[in-house]
Amino acid sequence: MKRTLLICAVFCLFISASASAQMLDFKGQTWATGHLGYAFGMGDAFSSYSEPITNTEFSSNAGIGFGGQFYYGVKENLLIGGEMMFQRYTYEMSAPANLALSLPAIDISESQTDFNFIVNGMFAVNQNPKSALFLCGGTGLYDFGGMQLGLNTGLVWRKQVSDKVHLFGMPRMHVVFTDSTPMMFQLTMGAQFSL
Image (cartoon, rainbow, N blue to C red; front, top):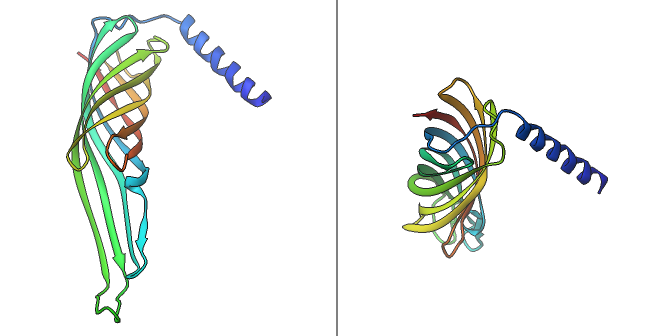
């Protein structure tokens, strides 16, 4: 309990110190970004399972993704925008030869890249010009066995490189509304350009 309180106190001090620094006004700003990341699949859609009669093993996972975003500042601490993202998925199936059923050994590995279109909002927790933290989230269409509605939420931390260029890190959680409810935890890095 004491450790949790200490972590919360340090976090509050960090936020208040950031807030006391010179503040930026994001209203009217236009940003374009490019990013590259890796997603870890979770939920039933990414579960490994086996078929006991033939000892066939099935597995799937998310993987590398890349894309771009476009944002516009509608208030001093709120931006809205869209994102196009390409996400790669892998599928594997393997089984030993089964002489009793006259089945050969199987070892198949395939990959597929799908397109997602997402609408997001970003809320600035602090507006420090050198280093800013944002809460982000939104909804969109995920190409997961056909276009499906999904949600995402996470954080964006950006670090200034020059007046017009920032680097950012973005951990996010994606949930797609299908029967298997695929979920992905995505770690992304990229560059943001002020237009």
